[in-house]
Amino acid sequence: MAAIGRAFEVMQEIENQASKRIPSSLTSRINQAAGRGSIPVSADFFEMIKKSLEYSRLTEGAFDITIGAVTELYHFEDGQGTLPDPSAIRQKLPLVGYQQIQLDEERRTVGLGRPGAMIDLGGIAKGFAVNKAVESLKESGIKAGIVNAGGDIRLFGYKPGHKLWRIGIQHPRKPDQVIASLEITDQSIVTSGDYERFFIRGGVRYHHILDPKTGYPARGCQSVTIVSETATDAMSAGIFVLGPEKGMALIERLPQIEGLIIDREGKAFVSSGLRSRLVWRDSH
Image 1 (tube, rainbow, N blue to C red):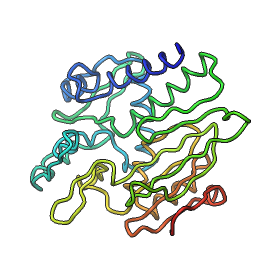
Image 2: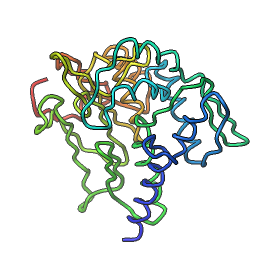
Image 3: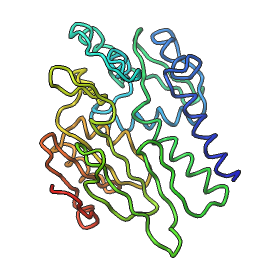
């Protein structure tokens, strides 16, 4: 169907602009120009950067796309992972700080203030692409559907028979099991977990959700699931870094989102608006 093809094209274009692994991408060009100037960008890319800054402010810096200078030290992308030398992390940490991102609304440019700084949009691009794909499908007249980008899911309309969609939430330590499920429509469900990209060294799990303040993987959670109107992987990642107590306090302050946090011991924290909607499949 042409509408589905167009939605895939929308998502691919966002990937082409956002991926730091593509040398010609806008992300790569901004990183290459760090400390030397700004780069003209597309309207969608500019919107994505603005949204990333909103999430940075909401989470008090727990979500920060300028973590890129540190994430590249871990080499999660190659499927193996590297434990960086502590001195290398200390050297890169001063390059992290979302306040250095330079936006010019009139010229629609994006820049980084510090030479060597890097943005990494891995924590926001998937959700942004999902939202844009849903917009495209709706504009094409599609009345119901699911868009799923590696665990970032947004649903709209109803299944045949006017039924809600039922979505399972993966158990963070049992990959073949779900820990809970809920029925949903016209919302998104996004999970960030320490089981997605990780490696084990000396019995310690090193995963891709890094704390921008330390440069090391955040340790308070196993997974964070956010239910909201639009896909917000940046929010799930930021709350993961905040940890269960601060993270749940933030969720409860924001009326537009609900959440399930599994802490590092496997204990579940559920927001007040989500408790009655979850159907549990395992002890919690």
